[in-house]
Amino acid sequence: MRIRIDLKILIFLILFYLTNQINIYLTILFFCIIHELGHLLTGLALKLKPEKIELMPYGLSASLKINPQDLNKKIGKGTVLEVKKIIIALAGPIVSLVFAIIFIYVDPIYITKQDAVYSNILILLFNLLPLYPLDGGRIIKGLLHIKFGNKTSKKIVNEISNITMYILSFIFSIAVFYFQNIAYFLICIFLWIITYDENRKFKNYMKACELIDNE
Image 1 (cartoon, rainbow, N blue to C red):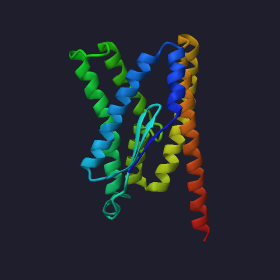
Image 2 (image 1 turned 135 degrees about the vertical axis):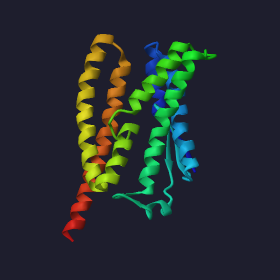
Image 3 (image 1 turned 120 degrees about the vertical axis):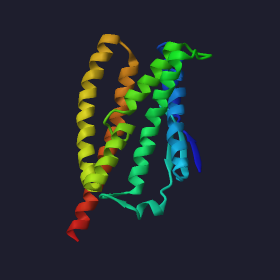
Image 4 (image 1 turned 135 degrees about the horizontal axis):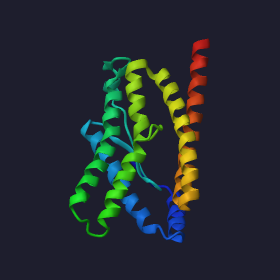
């Protein structure tokens, strides 16, 4: 298993420090890590082994090794692996929801109750956006894969993700202007980066499919 630290986290630390938002960023980062641990532990419970763990500006990113046996068990037009992916994707938001509820009634030690609840609700809503590869996008992708197959699910999710990003860009533009908070700008840039990367992967996938179909 490989463990890596993304150095872009230093850029985020500096930017939030200069804008006097370092405390809330560290709070959100901490609960993002807890959120991702929910994914990781659920994957381990489903007998998937971790392949790589990376500390990113938005928390942990963990990739899990595929169990070949899961690919041989069909469910609809998908496999057992897709069901496990859906469960793992749901685990993170459930963890964030549980922590948000806990901190409504329990006072945290080093941070305020408001920041603890706000951070977990923010992480919950953010990750449930219908944007791949966020949890919401992964859940939709898994359900569509089981219903329509891999290729069709990729097409639909790619369209949903792009539409979502255009809507979010409009919302974030208003938020930056109204609240004058650089955090909205950074979030929007980050989402566009992962959306661009997923669009590139999708185009390469479709080209590969065309080559196979033409053979």
